[in-house]
Length: 107
Image 1: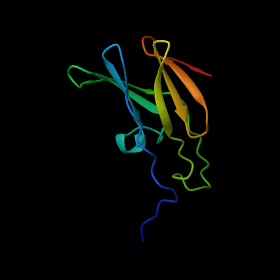
Image 2: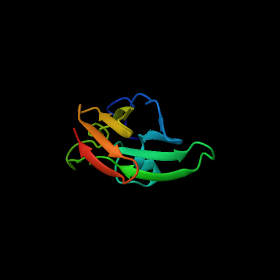
Image 3: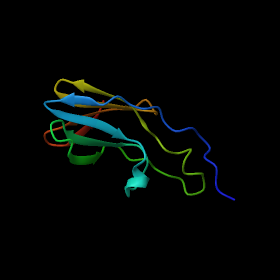
Image 4: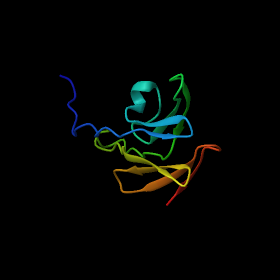
C-alpha cells in the first residue's frame, strides 16, 4: 500500500523578473535531489531560459517521528523589494535575497 499525502500541494507562485533574471520558487526540491521541499528559489536567464543558480532561502526542520509532507514549508509569494528578491512562506516568515551576492536576511 502506498503512502498518501496528508496535505495538498502548494499553490503556484508567480515568478519575478529583476534585471533580466527570472526568479521562481522550487516547491518540490526533494524530487530534484535537494534536501527539502520548499524554501528554494531558482534564477533563470530570461533571454536563454538557462538556470543560473539555485539557492536555499530557509531551512525546513523535519521531525523524523512525523510524516514529512505535513512538515514541508513552501514559498507563497515572490516580489521585488528595492532591487532585491523578497520571499514569503507558509509560516508567514519573510526574507530578502540580495540576488547579486546571494546573501539572505530575514525581515
